[in-house]
Length: 92
Image (cartoon, rainbow, N blue to C red):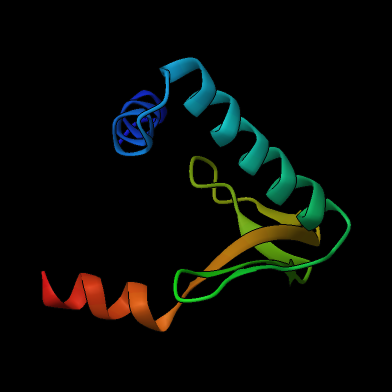
């Protein structure tokens, strides 16, 4: 599902214009992004939790040359599905 499809579905289900639905979706994405940048998790009960995970520095290999290279430590976003979402997907 693309962003445009999500906006269209939100507009239809909420009975609002697509422009308002897109603003709402953008506001949601901005709020989650801002919270994750601050290192805070975002929990939507039943749906899931957006959080930040830390990856340690590690050694990797260039697939073309086989040369060893160091991969730097990084913070990456993660999503953990909630119970209701897991059971809804499981039933389908």
